[in-house]
Image (tube, rainbow, N blue to C red; front, top):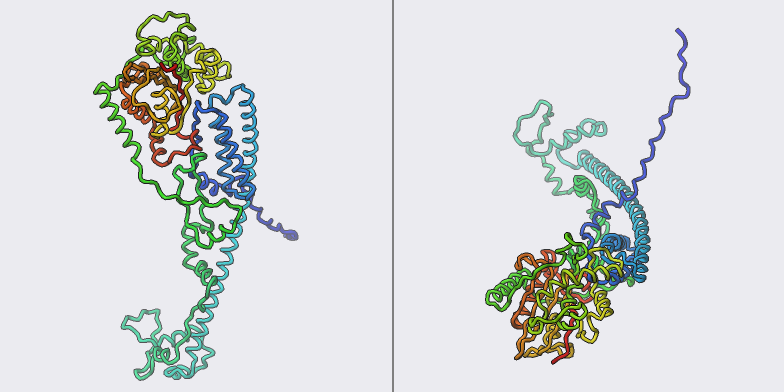
Length: 594
């Protein structure tokens, strides 16, 4: 045969390819998911609150984001940046005034959009840095485990070697009685197994059957001392490492074999504490989770960092409050009792806002409560002027005795409101069914001489569940002015009306003087009501106490389950009123006192 040609250049196996780089965001994903664990959905804004207030709030969040970045507080910056981005891209565009062509609002919108783009880029950069940090942490952890295993293996080998030396020394010790009879042959030639067998012969044997593969070794004579006697006379040093002190002892505990096996059984090592939780964007008292325990040493380190804000002092807990759902049921019972006793009367009107939207879009009054309410008030306190503006005759006696008539309210909802709605919305650049902010409506009504400025009494607002806050509105209605903080004992003979803005809706409140210090208080709601057979309603209170009870019931009936939870968990905060469901605002007008 031919000669075999040997391959003089055998293929050398190529080194393994390096592991592919992790995808963007993967290394820090668990960390970021933990930070987002308590993140809440974007909040819903009130269309009756000026949007410029919300833009001002975003500026504050933007400054917080920049401060966290400057301090290198990546976790805080990430949470704050996400809040800003979600609020700017989800919450704000839902406000009816977001696309308004008003120059100042356009400027604020463009600035916010530019800030949102900057924050988004900042968030991407934060994720990159977080990825690097997590990769570095993983490298450090892998190296720590490798060193830990090496140290454990070295300690194990040292311990085994120590045991071999001690056992060998015990077998060869010439002063040990009873071992001489087994030392006739050269001890150095004995292997370790033989030495161990000889040593085992010194221990007392239990009576048991010797297995075939066991080597039977004769026990020592009765007169021979045992190994226990030897240990009592010359005890062997313990076959363990000497005790460590201080930090070495702690590290040894952390690096123990049992701890390592336990961590391995769970698939990893919890090297780093869980990231902090964060509360809602603007409602910082919402279900704030308890902070993890901090050691005294960590507290001392934090105290030295002067750039960190001072911790908020813990105020004593307020007295327990009655759960709001209990108050809701109480107000409902109170309202029903007054209705049954005829102190409160509910009257059905002939229409409701938006009733003609399908049949005749020209007279669509949907979401027109911000116009309907002040028109009702203006017609109540200034009927002759309103009728002259509408070229109508003022002939019915009901207007002079009981204020505005039901037929006039129906006409305002179906006929007079829709053209004004279209005009104001067009002027403000709002969409077809947008809610209009009260101040914009009032400016239009004053410019059109529908609401004379000299009839304006005052404005108030705050927490509708706070007796002091709502008492300001009641006092202006009773007295017809805002000079006195005390309600008069008798009702002044002066017609007064108010537009009450609460929970994305506007209602009218009318004071109807009857003479002899007696007044009725009517609440006109243009929305369809089940107690008024699906029509708008006019609820009449025949005394002041009944009216105050009606306000309590009306307010409490507008809160959802989540609102009830929020009210139970949070005290009123004036600085957060634009985001609190309890916020109300009342505008009051009145005729000249007679």
